[in-house]
Image 1 (tube, rainbow, N blue to C red):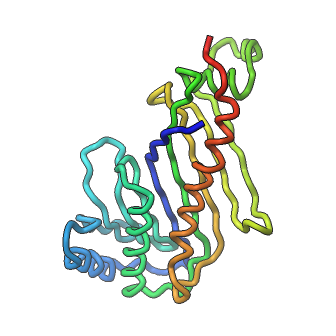
Image 2 (cartoon, rainbow, N blue to C red):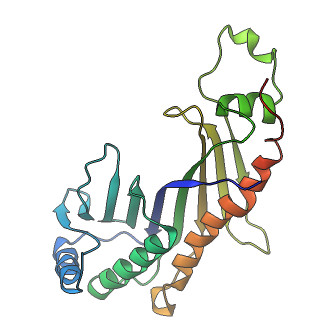
Image 3 (tube, rainbow, N blue to C red):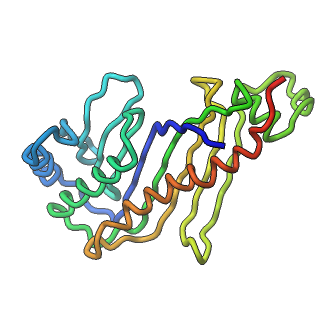
Length: 230
């Protein structure tokens, strides 16, 4: 069963050995972004007590578009911005490469990636009913609580294997902002990346995390999306 997924967030953290954040190098990167031509990927530069942040001011409540360079990590966030997978990977690799020119990091000790998306079940008008009836097959079992839950979900953890030496943590929940939508979040945990060997593994890991949602989680959910709500 094909679902039209709507990706609402990409997050990527590149962890590295702690070092004192320096605002000057990130400001130079910000200036270079304006010299690349076209609309710069980040329009604003700010300094906080935690480090330097490149960002884009956005009018939509809850939307975030930023790259923060903190004591122990590079943190990229795109939430409710409509950015595509390819554009996020391109931005991540471009800005990381530019920052590394200014602030050498010998190794990213780990990489954590989170992808969030929404889908609408086909056979259920309410994602809570999809989870309760279609997936969990619960009918009167919740009566002992004396009330109906407003949020249902499941969390699945997939440890590393010899063939795939990285872990995924998958959340599937009803979505409080829109009962019709099902909320999916996949977090991938990956090992070290040595920047001098190239940054391609970073983008590859983002795609792996996204593909796990689209190619594995969605077919899994489709198995339960089989009947019309009574």
